[in-house]
Image 1 (spheres, rainbow, N blue to C red):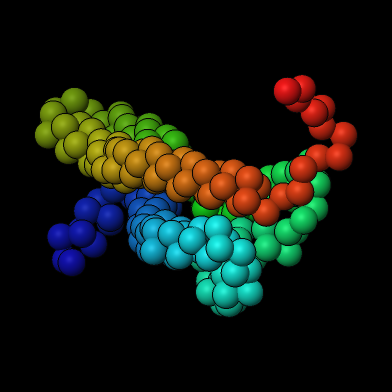
Image 2 (spheres, rainbow, N blue to C red):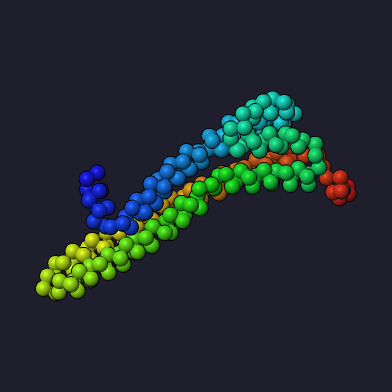
Length: 212
């Protein structure tokens, strides 16, 4: 802890917003890892059980399994059961709207994580430029008789660039991984919605009838 505080003090004021970015990124990553578990979005056991009950037309039992609405799959299934018997076009529109809301929830805070990954190195560069200006100012006053003064000032200024990269690189990598996770889970919800559409929607009254 003492070493960290020493680095922050040596790096100057820019180290404080970089530290805030690192704490915010850590909080977002931990929250999203917890929220994007399959058991919190689309538990396979629940999906299999509900599909089996719907195939047997035991809609009340399927609705009972999803009564808590604690996961995205449960909320999607509950909405689908409410729409049972509606025309396919109406059913599809409602399910797509429900799916969009769930996708937005799955991706919440990831945009902020991307912003943190983008601005952290810029903050580091700002700190470096500010430090270099101070270092050359000190040299201008003391003269070139002490090269160590310039080297020390430059080394201190570069601390902020290193700190910004230390925050940005993991944040960017984890951001991409979490986006991929969101895409996978969204795809699973889309598959579930398509299955529910086929099982619960009524035929479109205006759909063309195939001739024998």
